[in-house]
Length: 95
Length: 420
Image (cartoon, rainbow over all chains, first blue to last red; front, top):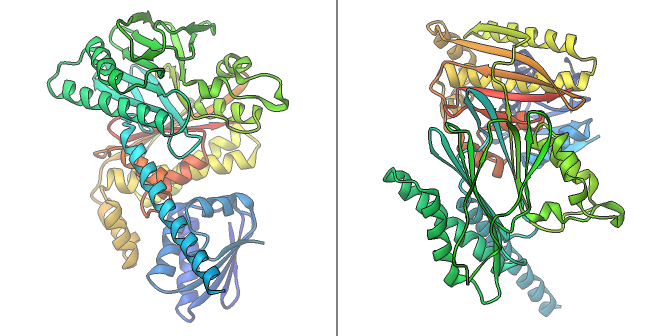
């Protein structure tokens, strides 16, 4: 997995799988939201995501009030978000 | 214009009310269907993977089932198929199932289980409720793992399929006519299952479903598909690939037994630490690099491993509940708390990986065992029925990316399948 970021956009390339992936995403986003309240994530080609990251995103949006939009590159990941009833919460859409 | 708006509002409210009632009815239906083996395996000598498929066609299903653990060596299964479709069939199926579960609860409470008395009481109970021309199809099934027998009383249900150790498919036909108001006697037979590895019990919804191009029914394919299926997922995939659409309620119970003593190709024990999680993940990833070139399969297996291994680590060995975890995440104390707790934890996490070839397909069997207190897998039924709730998403993700996940009865060991 690789991360690239601009001021309020985090792009995740590759498959999201490990605890280290979660920690890296968390560190990047924690840093980003320390200065702004609106972020965009591009999950380019991962076909799934770990529950830890879902839980973390959930907390950012529902508890911390972060305005998050997630652009998803794969149908499988979008389907998972649909299954978990998270599409609206994360403003998830296929790109 | 105002009249139209009022009408639209009225229709919206009616739709909301109907949706609310439908949700309640379905929740009630699922409460009636008791399943003591939800996402469980029986790990007692051999490993039995027990899978269920319950897909009502409409909101109120004319099918019902129950799966109960009677004691350490007896398991009971019931499948009921009410005549026709709609409310009448559903009422019969649900009423019967509720009564059977109640009787079983009482029999277990008083340590007085009797298969024959259960059937007799159930028939006596349902007969007055049946309409004059109503008939019900039922499977009463009792496995006794100590004596390796299957006792059965089948009332006009499709033949159950059994596969023996020589891969022959045997059919267990009904030994009773459809249950009606006028039933007087019933028959119970017993079958020696010592050499039986696989079982399929189902209602007729799956058998009678038309296949694509209108050229017959699934009855023409079920034996071959059953023979070639290692798990319910295989059978379900084959079935839905052959049909255009579901035509009736579908209920099936799929049980697969395989030898626990199958040698593990890879086996390792890990300390309970965050550092070891990375080591375990890397070790597992290297195993899949050796097994397959398919990156998607390897990724999915790795993802499931991460989820279930983390569960073994944080919920199993460290004993952190979901509520505590969420609190720690909220307060940004999660990782430092894990490091603090793990420093005094000497429990291990065992991982075993083996490969099994079945009917020209290969399956990787991964088993992760922790030394924690385990959990009641019944809570998974709430997760899988409502994927929007907060806890258990890891198990949901795991199920979605594997070919089946199964916990032991204690809940401290999980086995999952990846198909190569």
